[in-house]
Amino acid sequence: MEGTSAREHLNNFIVGSVPTVFYIPDYITASEEDRLLNNIYQAPVSKWKSLKNRRLQNWGGTVHEKGLLAQDLPPWLKQITHRISEESRLFPSELNHVLINEYLPDQGIMPHQDGPAYVPVVAILSLGSSVVMDFTPHPSLNNSTDTSGNNIDDKTSKPAHMAMNSSQGLNKYRSFSVVLMPRSLLIFKDKAYSDYLHGIKGCEMQRYDEAVNVSNSMKSHGQAQPTSGSKKASDDFETGGDTVIHRTGRRISLTCRVVMKVHKNLIKL
Ligand SMILES: O=C(O)CCC(=O)C(=O)O
Ligand SMILES: [Fe+2]
Image (cartoon, rainbow, N blue to C red; front, side):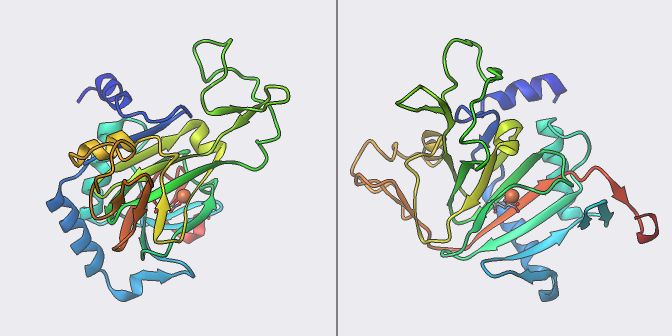
């Protein structure tokens, strides 16, 4: 696909009003998902690093403050990262680093920002069970007014992601969520990357009232809008007035990024 048309196509997948979050349901097929899972679980046990609330595999090398001590990605990962960078045209070079996180239904990741070593665009491919990712304004921002006005075309109105403060109409950044269905691809950059923290709550029941992509994710599964009926949409979704995901299985995510400064060996660090 040509660069411009690829990007125009991608614009159809923008969700919410904070620049810029793309959510692409069913980015990969169920058999591609199976193949990735097989490769992930074929890795030696020593490849897993256990953290307090999840475990992860690190591929592409070790990220240091001064850059990446690079290792080639295995072909099964290169295939998917190449496709993501080709199709999105959002990355300045090939994706060279992939973190694979595994979460049990009661596990999550604390609200955080990705480190400074990365180019500020991240692509997250989801496998397994659905989760809700929450975006919360960086604590340093909620007391300040955004005066740039560069989020909107009509500069006289407030960007939709800024909540009104009743006393003086002060702009405040507003939290939002994205439901991450299995096989979906999430890409975020710009303010969503620089001004917001992202995280996943470590609980089995997750509310998605503030989800900016709900109709998208429901549509891709041929289901009704979660708020519109009392019928249960799927095993994972409860729609009887409550917008809640019940996480039943493990979720695996591939966080794909570019580290700009690459070192091939330690001596150059
Ligand atoms: O698992 C996810 O979807 C998020 C992972 C993440 O934010 C990270 O690895 O920095
Ligand atoms: Fe992250």
